[in-house]
Length: 331
Ligand code: ADP
Ligand code: MG
Figure 1 (tube, rainbow, N blue to C red):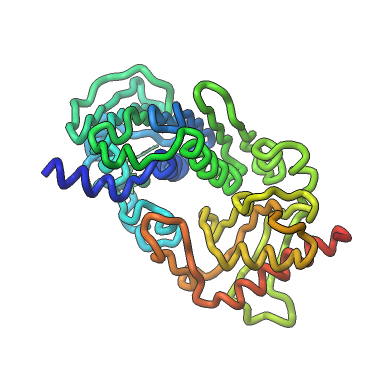
Figure 2: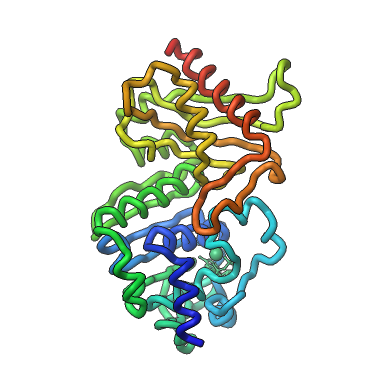
């Protein structure tokens, strides 16, 4: 049974970044206003996430790490919860616990004391009292220590960290009202203020040069396209000369969730037309709101890729939004 559990877990938890993603989502679901992520060796040695959310009462800790345990039933079908998850719900902590040493330590605000539980390779320990601040801290050590095949599949530390960084950045930009920080081997990578301002989050994550090069985007269906299924396109895009040689700085969000969507990236690039140098890509933080039913999130359970039923309309809206933003700024 343990072996089956481990194999299943290895198929859904691919790498440190997928663990980080699930844990950040849990912190955000818990209403956190601060989420501090720190990882060792790209997350392969250790992952720690501390939040100031609602916490987990001592008598619910065991359930939290159990199979099919979720306190969020009813939200399962929401796009809000379906995009980019491990592909099934109520299983993140259980799954991670099967392939690592997992400790969940928590104190609900107002509770006199905290408590913790440790799961080691699927063995669930007892709930113990623990001194801890209000909120929840989740620690994952030795990811894949008991699944050598999966561990071998991990890339260099730097590559794993890049993926972790991309995930944490993605959530930080999608949630400018939450103070998100990332630390790697004891050094701070970035820390957003959580003041609700997207530009300030961009400044924290990408630095002054990029933040200054970003222009505001604000699109809603106009007179000519009142039947567009797209509710709105908002966010920031960079001057055409502020670029990088990688597409990874095109951050896209559908209905508030961090996703990748070829259609959105292509539409952004098309909007720049011939203004980009060859193999150069702009920065974008692009929020698209569409009716949940128009998004197909099941392209691949492990990936963040989504597709749209009305792709041409979505592309057209994004292209218009970016073009208008650039034009507004004489670009
Ligand atoms: P899911 O998020 O789908 O419910 P998880 O395995 O990720 O499943 O988490 C199991 C349960 O543990 C959650 O439903 C929630 O009740 C609790 N939980 C996990 N992380 C946190 C957190 N950071 N703060 C508060 N509760 C949490
Ligand atoms: Mg979860």
